Image (cartoon, rainbow, N blue to C red; front, side):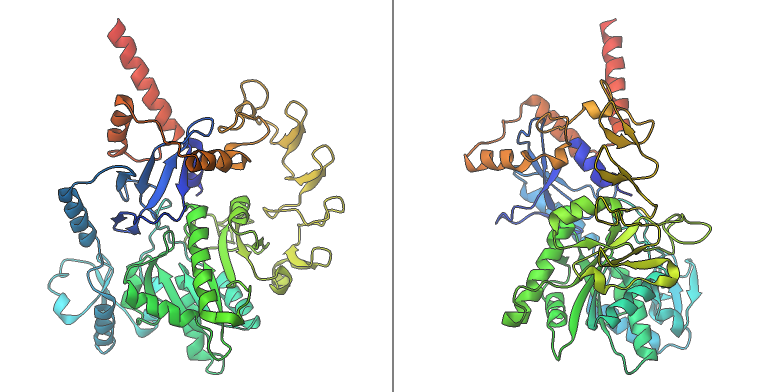
Amino acid sequence: MAEAQETDESLGVEVVLSGESEAAPSCPHGPTLLFEKVGRGGGQGRRFYGCSACRDRKECNFFQWHDEKVSEARLLAREAENRSKRPPFTQQQYCSRFRKFVALDEKTFCQDCQILLLPGDQDAHASHKADRVTVSQLRRPSVLLRPLENKKSNAQYLFTDRSSHFLLDTLSALGYRKVLCVGTPRLHELIKLRNLERKDEHVSSLLLDIDFRYAQFYSRDEFCHYNMFNHHLFDGAASGKVLEAFLAEADGEKVVMVADPPFGGLVKPLAHSFTLMAQQWRRLQGSDSGSADLPMVWTFPYFFEPRILECLPSFTMLDYQVDYDNHPMYKHGKTGRKQTPVRLFTNIPPRDVVLPSEEGYRFCSKCERWVWSLNKHCAKCNVCPSKDGREWRHCTACEKCVKPSWKHCQACGRCGLPDHPCGPGGAAADGCFNCGSLQHKRKACPHKDAQRFSRRTSGGKAKAPGKKAKASGRKLSQKPVFKSKAKRKSGAARRAKKMAASTT
């Protein structure tokens, strides 16, 4: 599920979040992001705008060079396309339709269009598949709606009841009475259901989600159409006021944010959006907040830990394993794997998050946090080292704990899988794409940002593109920006074959 981010790194494309004053052009998913193609040796490449939410250009084909002059006709065509992709109703209209729908004796839902049907809609949907719905089903729209499962854009994997109940129980025990649910519709539903059952323990919830279908079931104070990759509220000022009112902590009600982004999304834009959310929260609290941060819980696979901690150093990864109902592998039980790789990243003190002992978690007094039963404390590293749920072992040569399946390789001086490529011609010989060092990769290069920053501050400019660059620009505007290695190799093979045929 990390295909998009890994492709970004291998192609030398980076997200640029420099806070430039110029407004980014918009696609149907809101303001686009600015990317930069990075050449070998850290050379400054050409910049371009791409969709913030979709890594696959089959889902959103927006592409524009940063220095490109766009004609008026193209701007008008782009605006028309953006309008055509907007939801069929406004948030206010959805709320009005829902009130009428609840009053109906016979309630039907169109499975083809994923919409609640009013009497006047029946003729237009006569040939579609429609099911009757009950009041209890309306309280759980995530079960009624068909999940969106595109891994490279709006993948919609839903928490199991186990994970939802654990999160809500934990947050309630910590005293949080306002939960900002960013891409977590299951948690939002559970909070509303509990409020109906437990009148003495009310918890407020606001759902921010890019799936506008949820607007059919919730009021303006309960749902906002939101893109977490660019911190964009689609309804503008109206949704902005709702979010602002929710983040304000009145009468001692503490706020916590829980986010569950698509695993194919880029970490850097997500962390930037969450930072902006925290800054807004801090401004609303005034002088009372001091240097405090908005409490956050971010669910993401454990192998993204270095990138998340690079962007948000105050975060810690917990051992709790999050599972999903509609994911083929990331869930407990016979059909899933023994350990799901999804973890909780949070700035809440780890010792305060009590993990369920009945599921195999225990408290490590030395680390002062709850860990998985197989995560044994290492006296040499002075930490519970396991990330993936297995018991790790200490390698004396590497002076750190490694996965149990890894072996120390004398050729490259590090631990890895027994059949890993190493030595001349192997993957280890590739080294850093930026500076050429064999000791690290480009994403960990200490000179990466320094070189690019020095060129910009000294007034250096990218080399003007020639005919080849223009030709590649036309191709990029027609095909996906991020291609897999297999596609690039097959393309090179076809070009070589064509050249050989022309010479003969």
